[in-house]
Structure formats: structure tokens, C-alpha cells
Image (cartoon, rainbow, N blue to C red; front, side, top):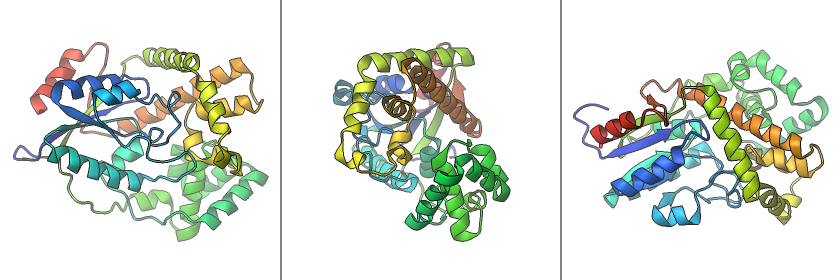
Length: 317
């Protein structure tokens, strides 16, 4: 982006989970005649409401939201699909003279939209089935070790319990003979976005503050009926018929997997709560690690830097 860039502005509110992105996006959209584009991999799924902190019906009536409730929990959705849908939403918002506000914490989605994706091999059902069968016998930790032998960089990024990403990385390697890290170095050229984007990261300076926000929000979700929501998902015939429902990206979202396992009797109520909070903290840590690589983003503490946030927004818009 240069000083002579005449494209209309858009704001990207980025940050870890529970950092206050949703509330600020809603406030600014109301003040600036804007619309919100969700950049959240859980919000694309219908039925994931409480645990995904999906904007309420009232909030969505106040401000138009895009890229929410696009798929059923058992239906696939990719980063490439998100990038295409988000571009279409940006075109539509700009054409109507509104300000787009990209808000969320899914780094891969932001990357796909703003930088583009490499043309790595598409998903292959047979290879994925083979890897799932191997994991049933050997365990995902063993497959993670296999990944480390062929792609140390990916293994360092991916947790040993993250079955979805381990599966995808090994799938790419087995299909192409190249590591997923190599593929990601070959980013495809993408068409220029119709907007110039200001990247703002909301993140408390003290990790303990973020941890407390995560715990408070998780308890609020429990009080709002998270377990009842997951019981409703478990009753869906399509999920009952699925051979491995917890392998679905929708149900791997933090909170949902832990609630599902609790309802399966694998953890008592106290263990479920602690596992849910811990999984959310781990997600926030991964998000912060990714955000540190966004060198053109400006960081603000949502509690103490409100004046700076307002100034950055006002100067850009």
C-alpha cells in the first residue's frame, strides 16, 4: 500500500480469542456506517452459536454481518473458499459505499485473503482415510513423529494432538513428495483486493489478563447453555451417522470437542471446564504466535490503548 493508493479503506481487527474484537467491530461499524466480515473458522458453521461466540440476532440486526452460517457442521469449507467468499463480500460492501471491517482470529483465513495461498494438492479422500486408519492403530503422536521426519518446520508449528493439521500435512507430502512447508513458500499470485487494509491487533499486554478473560467467557458460555447446544448437535442424524464426528473441523473448535468428550463420559464436569479453558488458552497462544509475523500490523492493548486505537482508525479512514 502506498500514499497514492486510492482504493477505499477497510479495517482488519485481528487478535487472539476473547480480546474484544467483536465488541469493537460492532461499535465501529455502527459509528462509521460499516459492515462486518467475519474472519472466524467456527462462525461459518450453523448451530455453533454459544461456544463460537457468534454475534447475536440483535447484533446482526444492528449491523450487517458477512460469512456467518455458511455451512452445516458436517460440510467442508476451506481457506480458499473463504478467500473467494470474502472478496465477493468486500466487493459488495464497497459497491454500496460502506466501510468493510474484517474481524476475527483465524490466521489462515486472513492469510488466504490478504496474501493468497499456494496451489498445493487438493484434499484426497483415499489418502485421508488411510491416514485416519493408521492413526487408529498407531495414534496421532506417531504420525506427528512421521511428519517431523519429513517436515520439521511443520511439526514444530503443529501440536502433536492436532489431528486435522497433521493429517493435512502428511496428505500433501504423500500426494506430492513435497512438504507442506515447501508448498507454502510458493504463494500464488492473487488479484489485488478492492480495498486498502489497516491491520490492528487487539491483545492485552499481560498474558494473565487474557487468561482471565478466557476463563470468564468460558464460564459465561456454560451458563448460557453450551452443553445443551452440543447435545443438540449430537442429536443431528448427519452427525450421528458420521464415523468420526470429532475429526470434523467444526467439532474440533475449542469448547465443542471438550464438551462432546464430556458428554461421552470421558471427563467429569470439572475436568471438562478445565480442558475447555486450557484448549482456549492454547488457541490464543497459537494466534499470538501467528500475529507476531504480521509485521505491518499495529498492536494495541484493548484496555489501555483506546485513544491510540481511535487515532489510528481516524487517521486511516
